[in-house]
Length: 250
Image (cartoon, rainbow, N blue to C red):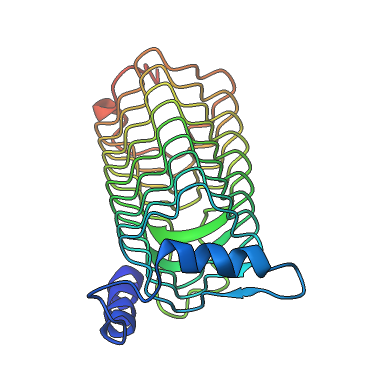
């Protein structure tokens, strides 16, 4: 059983203990908890069911959201900077324009989440983000690469299959071994980004800035690099180069 399969088994067991029908709190109650909170008195939202609520524009920096159920929750323009969101469920959540800088997100499903224009700079994320919208997001200096010293459950890595990363700032990032098959990276900034052994099969990197990026051992079958900037880009040990579009490796 590989890492992703094991992840979903654990996630389903976790969700089986959640309410899943209606949110435990309403927005006014969440606002009241946040209003009273400070760094010494944290708002306890740990493992709370907040599904489907409109929590847009709120400041959660003094809240504990570990393990909370945020499926379909609207957190657009909210401030979650620096939080530990491990095991928090965020399928189809709306984080458009939210501040998620320097967060920790591990063992989480964010499939179909809206993270467009969100700030995730400096974040550490190992999550399932397939079909998520990260267009124009700030992903600079992120560490989303697999930790090969901590893989007791198999390969745990960021999964961005068919994710929309068009126009995103992904500079100086660690995406080593990330799963990015058919991801949309059109016009994205990947300057000096590490993509060692990442899977970018069928990905769209047209017009992307790949200056100084490292694609060593990456899977690039049928990826499209048309009009991409590749000055100083490393393509070491790439197989099936003949299928890659927009680059002449000769």
